[in-house]
Length: 86
Image 1 (cartoon, rainbow, N blue to C red):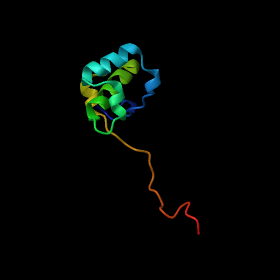
Image 2: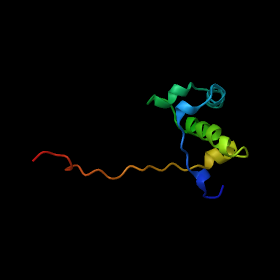
Image 3: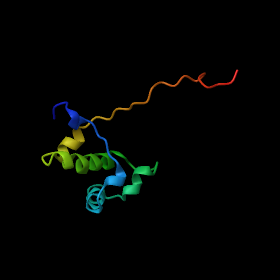
Image 4: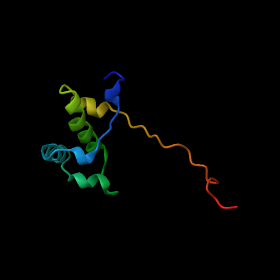
């Protein structure tokens, strides 16, 4: 997969249809709320979320494309002294 906007995963879980939730659960073998459980694996859940959401924009988006997505964070470095009282 080439590096395009398809390389970014932006999912609003509240916008998933019931059918998409069922598909995600079938693909992962886990309930959707497993995403919020620290002891559950996340990779397959993230791939399934990517697969169903990206397919809305691009019907040719495949499971293999979902597996190729990279995870990036927008979190900046935290200054431990910032906000500390003197």
